Amino acid sequence: MNRNLKFLVAVCERIVLIAVAAPYVLAIARSLPTHPTFFLAAASEILAAFFVLIQKRGEVTIRAYALTIAVAGTCASMLVRPGGIAVLPSIVTGTMMFVGLAISVWSKLVLNRSFGIFAANRGVKNGGPYRLVRHPMYLGYIISQLGFLCANLSSRNLVVYGIAWAFQLARILEEEKLLRRDEAYRSFSERVRYRLVPGVF
Image 1 (cartoon, rainbow, N blue to C red):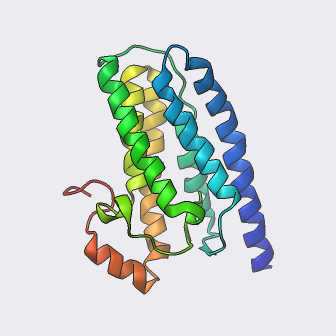
Image 2 (image 1 turned 90 degrees about the vertical axis):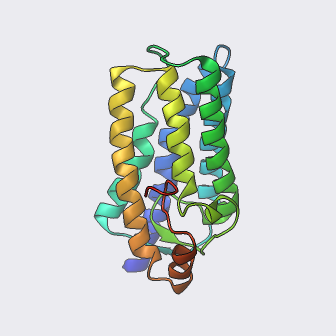
């Protein structure tokens, strides 16, 4: 039964990511003529979908709470839409988005087939941006999302990102509960002290 449930979780992970990423990518694609920097946002989600489809097996949590916050954290941020007011020059917001998305894409490339939506241990990665913080992909997301928000400030986008970031923080803590069962991860966390922001958290 447990094996069947894990298989169902794996299938649902793929369905959820593709179903949510598709309209987000399409919305971003429509904005490319006027906002070419949004290309990286679409590329990041396409890369995520690809790695989820080819991910390798590992220890995956099937706790309802962990699954819920993972889906919410992934889906919430994709509910933002271009529009609103720009509160910073486009060169600044574009740079923030580029840097943030470059960090998240780099993190995904390092994770490769270990990438997934749900908390799992498919092998501990400690190269690239993982030498700086334990969850660099989430740091990249937040930097790029701040850039997008400052270029498209609206009450909708502000609320969406506030909710998404709360879920992402909960997601980090939940992932570490699983990962800390692994001696390799405990050793990694001793070398890399901070989870998300160097010197802060």
